[in-house]
Structures are given as structure tokens and as C-alpha cells.
Amino acid sequence: MDVLSKFEHFGLALLVEKFWFELEPAGAAAIHQAWMGVSQRRKGKGFIASIKHNDRKLYLGTFDTAVAAARAFDDKAAFLRPYTTNVNFPELLKNEKPPQLNPKLIHQYKFRPGCPVETLVRYGTQWDFSDSDVESGSSIAGGGVRERWIDAEITKVNPTDFTYDLLVLQPKKHGVNPNAVHVPENYIRNKTYTINEVVETRIRYTEKNEPCEIWIAAIVTNVHINGSYDITVTEPEKHQVNPLAAHVPQDYLRPLCEMSTEWHE
Image (cartoon, rainbow, N blue to C red):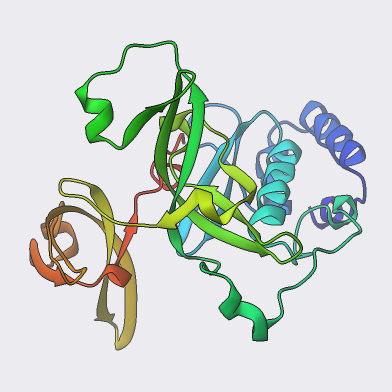
């Protein structure tokens, strides 16, 4: 299996995988072990591509071949980690490296990588709008264009043009591309949570004398003037925590990411 990871070309690896399935179907089930971020579906055929990012496991899709799933992992890794070469096909990465941000100039930027934000999306509308659109943050601009602020996360600062690359956290819900590049600063604002919004909250506890930190689902029940929140944990028995938490700092909350919740195994 180790020989697969040494191929330099995507096409050659794909060709070998197809021949492997034809010659040895039983042994080919473990072919995904040669690739980073690839696992085999527990039920049915196909391979799942996933990547870990900020304590989340993001689902990237299900593919017919392990090589295609490995390529999907590489594409997302190159977006989330612009300076990495730890991918399945490093030869396919772009030769030019993005300019690195000078740490001394970080104060010039309003947002930092990893920061949860909201970004403005605009798209044409052919539907009727109800009061629910207004309540959810939608608005109609001139020319029949709908505007909406959606949850995202800063992945990179572009020092050449003072823009940002974003990971959209609910791309299917809003019908947009999950990768947003070179977004101007005026299209981004700090994330604020609203009452009844489903979020994730961070809890810390000790397991086998080692500290453990996980994110669990919760619902915002109240917003305080000092920027803290009251929340209700959705599954307190499962995590053995108090179902009610008051005055939770914003640093202990983050938006829900559909790519980490929608799995197809």
C-alpha cells in the first residue's frame, strides 16, 4: 500500500487504483489507507474525503475512487492551509507561494485567521419575500438583489490587496461556494449571535488525569449588554454538564458548521 503514496501524478494513481479493483477486489477495500483524509464508506460503495480544521472534522464529499477523494482533500488543504505541502499530491500544488503576512503588520488588519465572522452575499431574486427573510437578516437592495449576512471563518489574510479568504460555514443552506477568496473588508463584520440561534460552546473537563476540550451543541437563550450570552445545552446528559449556562463569553461560542454535521457514511 505504501507504493501508492509515492506516485507523482494523479492520473497514474487513478489508473492503478482501477486495475487494483479489477485484479483483487477483496484486497482493494483498504486502498484508502494510502491517502490522507480518505476513508471508506461503512455502507455502500465509495470513499469519503474529510479534513480536520479548528477542532472540526469537515465532510468534503463522497467519491467513487479513493484518488478522487484524496484530490478533494488536497484542494481543501491548500485553501485552509496556504503554506502547507503535507498533501497527497504535492507535485500538483502551485509553484508560487502566497506572500506571508508580516507579524509586525498584523495590527493593520481588523480580522485574524480563525476568527468567526459574518460575510455579505448578494444574489438575484426571483421569489417572493416574507417577514421571515427580514427577521433572518435578509434585505432587498436596488435592482432586485437580495443581501444576507452569513456565517464564515477567516482562513487567510491577503497582504497584497488587503482582502481575506473565508470558509463559509453553511454553504448548502445559502447556496454559495464554501470557499470565498479575496473578500474586501467592507463585506465582513464581527460575528454576533441571536436568540434561538444554534451554536457550539466549548467545555473543558478532565479525563484520565488529562484535560480535555470539546465543542458541543447549544441554543442561545439571552444576549447581555456586555457581549456575553445565556445558552441551553441540547444534550446535557450525553456530555454530563449543566443544561443551563449564564454569561458565557463570546470566545466560548462559535457558529454551527454544516460540513461537520452532515455526514454520509
